[in-house]
Each structure stands twice: as structure tokens, then as C-alpha cells.
Image (tube, rainbow over all chains, first blue to last red):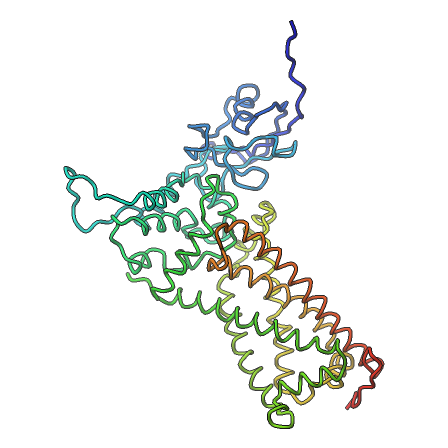
Length: 245
Length: 235
């Protein structure tokens, strides 16, 4: 009986930017790890292997392992992306991994996107604004399936932070709400339950930290792991906000 | 506190002034390049633009008036665009590092726009001022004299490269900024638009630099590249 042997894969060198801000003696430094690649290997799998074999204290986040939770966002060879959705076969043999910039660093590749996202959500009031208190015993008002689909399309955002890390504007001007914020406004603008008008939306994004700060570099659109139509949505919101003026 | 309507108006004004200038340049460079058809063609085009076909003679004041308006739009556009420039060393350094790491086309294109725009603050201002104050010198002989003997060719060489790149990239960026020409597949359309940017850039650069070469030829030899003697050179 034949036994299947795995063909030797590429020798990967994975460099991880390591730093523990909780340790006063810690200095940011690159740590290098050698791995053998195999078919179907993702960065998430590679990181697990590094932690198992070389660095048990390596910090990185993951929950779903399927590009749904948005926890494993990191900068891969200079570009933000999700570790669980990135096959090592799509990368050169030398891979650098760094934490997403702009977010609070927890340690190594782990960042707190939640704090930033919460601040943005509170600032933009990203929730349904109704003028009357909804009757929780009554059936919700019906919505056309096409409209529900449109809203759902934008609601697929997983707040991974990749669009913020890829945005030249956000990197220069840290108060910029970024594509994630503008996409949320586009989503609530579509929602018939949200009774805010464009003039109301202008109050939260009608400035240089909002839609008019966007320089259309489209890094957000090009790295979004969920392939959200950010280019189209930001342009649409810009047109709408200009008509308010 | 209520958000001011000013950011929206400034954003729109930046786009409109940029669009007007890009369209103006598209025609300007074509008119300039009429020199490639010979000194007579350029003389006809410059004369027509100065009202010769209507008034029977060139009215240089028309050029002065047009340049004055273009100069004003140019200054407005520069002022509006400067709002987006990196404002301090930290922002400059952060963006540059980000761009190098990302290796992302559109991010790099913006940087190119920043630098070509910055260069034009000086290059275009010199050109506009000269043309505004000496419109009577426009013609195959006068322009060639200015380019060769008044040493404007290095300025025009740099200005041509800067303005063509800035305008072509600017038009692309305007399209993605406002969502023009997105069609049913915005990603594919964006790729097409980007291709168009490079085609337009190549065509305009070739045409405009050849035109500059034609003026240099006239300045150095006293005749155009068809052998027609150009009168009045050095006057």
C-alpha cells in the first residue's frame, strides 16, 4: 500500500514586529521565524504554528478563522489584511507581519479596534434614529427584499480596521472617520426606519474629518476583505452631502 | 454645534476649478501643438484665438483677459488643494512611510499630484505672468525667441511634464471621487479609467514635447521643420 508523502513546501521566513506595551522594558523589534509551507496554509495557521513551536507568548487575535469576525486584521507585507483569509501561497517567501497602525496596541499583532470603532460609532451615531418609541409587541414594518439586500450589503462590514490602516488620510489625520464610518452612514441613510435627513447626516460627516476629508486614495476599497463597495458609497455620500450645502 | 456648509463648498470648488483647468489645458496644449503643422498653422491658431477672424487683426488684450481669469482659477485651485497637503513633518513622514509600505497605485498617484502641483505653484506662475503681460509676443517667431533666447525651454519642459501628469491624474481622481462613469462594474471601469490616464498622458506628453522641440528648432534655425522661414525672430 502506498503512503502519500507531502512534497516539501517553500521555506518561509515570517518576520513579526513584536512589542509588549505593558512591559516597560519592551522595545519594538522584528522576530524572525522559519516555517515550511504546505498547501492551504493561511497566515493564521502559520501564526499558530509559530506560537506552538517557537513563541508561546506571541499575541495575535482570532475568533472565527473564516473572515467573519474581523479580529485577525494585521499589516501583511505593508498592506492590511486578515490573517485567516490570506494564503501564504499568495505571498513571497519572506513575509512581514505588523500590527494595524492607529489602533491601541495590546501586544505584538493584537490591537484594540473596539475602542476606535466605539468612538467612531458614538461620534457618527451609527444606530437607527426613530422619532417614536417602537412598539416591541407589534410586527416590524415590512421592507422590500431589494432594499433589505442593499442594506445588508453594507452591513457586511466586520469592523476589522483594515480600511483605516490602509487610508493615507486617516494615517495623517487621526480624527478622520474613514471608510468604515462613511459606509455606516451610507447604511443608515438607506434604512427607512432611520428618520434622519441628509441635513442631519451632514452634521456628523459634513466636515474635513468626515466625507470632505476623504482624498479618494481608495486604499480602503482595495484592501477591504469583505469587498464592500466603498468607492461607490463614499462618492455617493459625498454627492449627497454636497447637495445639502 | 452645527457643521458649517463651508467644507462642502470648498470641496466642490476644488473639484470644479481643477476640472476647468484640466479642460483648459487639454485645449491649450492642442493649440500649442499646431506648431507641429508648421509656423503658418500656429500663426493661424494664435491669431484666431486673439480674435483675428472676427476683428480682422489680433487683439492681444483677449489673451491677457483669458490668462487673468485662468490665473485666478489657478490660484484658487492651488489654495484649495493646499488644505490636503501634509501640514507638518509628522504628517509628511507618516504618509511617505505609509505609501512606501502599501505600494498602492492610487495612494502613490496622490503623492505624484502633490509634487506636480507644488512644482506648478512656481512654474505655471512664471508662465502665466509672462503671457499675461506680453501677449503681443505670441506667434511662431516670438514664442520661439522666448523659448530659446530667453531660456524658457527648461521651464516649459518641466511645466509640460508636471501639468500633463497633474491634469490626467487629476481627471481620473475626480471621476473616482464623485463616482462618475462607474457603470455597472465600478472596479473594471476604474481599471479602464486608469489605463486611459496613461494613454492620455503619453499622447499629450509626446505631442507637447514635440511642439516644444519644434519651437526650439525655429529658434535655432530660423525656420520651421518644413523649411518655411519664420520672419521676425529676435524682434
